[in-house]
Length: 110
Image 1 (cartoon, one colour):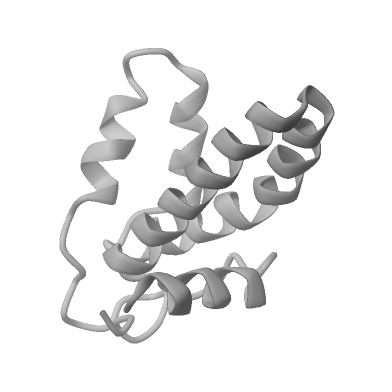
Image 2 (spheres, rainbow, N blue to C red):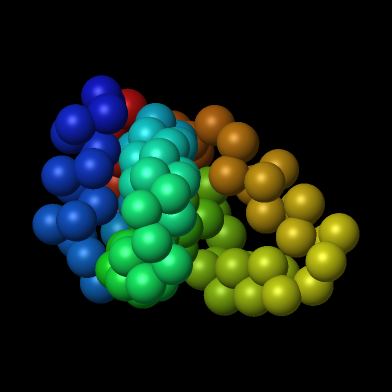
């Protein structure tokens, strides 16, 4: 999956917490979020706030779908609230896709 496809997919599944998301889909979308937030912060504090709020739900949704892709619960994203322990999430996000079906569906296309 390329950058443009990943961003389109994540925004089309804006609040879809079911299913699976490939590694490339997740990381391309995170890159898009970081770039937009950096540019928005350079423009104005309020533009940054609006951009951050606009990305909040899609980032949570794609994060949940990414965790589903490796066979984990989306609730593990609550680890973000605990400093240092949230590094476990990064480890989960970089894991390869489970090639077999799991309770969350068929494997996502790379």
